[in-house]
Length: 279
Image (cartoon, rainbow, N blue to C red; front, side, top):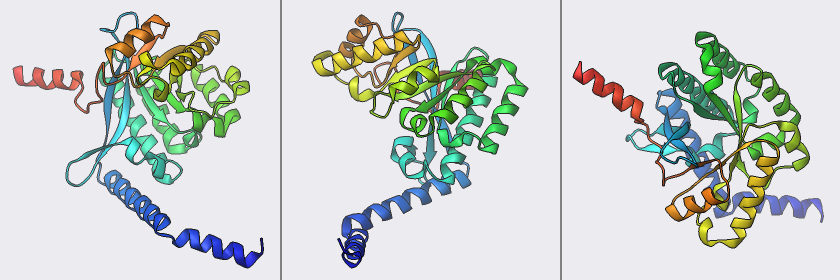
């Protein structure tokens, strides 16, 4: 293909209506996130992860980042994280999530909490300072903090992630591999990571009670977790039938709308507000 033809083809791709629409959407999303962060409109929504053998007992909570637009609408991370994850805004989001998570752990002494982070934030000085200050202020926080790294993010820089995890696990911090099975894991790396928790991607879990293919795949993923002595968590559990099937095949924990939706007003915040009113 000659150079002129390549240039014309690339220019056509950049200028076609779909590309222009995608670029405009991404710009709007980045502007929305930047405005929310600059005006302190970012927060955590908390969702319970329950024990499979005792679904009425919460094993821990996940703190999921949310932003609020100028109208007061709360926007979940899935609507913006892909556009900002590789940018400086992505690092700022990880810092905010960690800071708010550490504050919550300090406030609620019996709480275990997982916080999401990108492997790109490893070595980011502001993130590291927030973690060090939080652990120094309350050493018990380390054993109650779980850091979740997505499978895709971890596999981009496996050696860096391994060293990062090893250093923080000696301080008592737990690590979870998020979205396990989504298609990026190199199993030659998995045995070297020493994740404590494997979170099985929701695409295999939703409707699993009636999907033979996903049943086989999920059982295989649970077996991998058991082999490496990692707890397994099923994401996106949305029905009683799915929950019962997962219990029967040996999942350790479950997370999803069937057990509780993410909320910016968790029970401990409501309890604290009620206590103030009663005082």
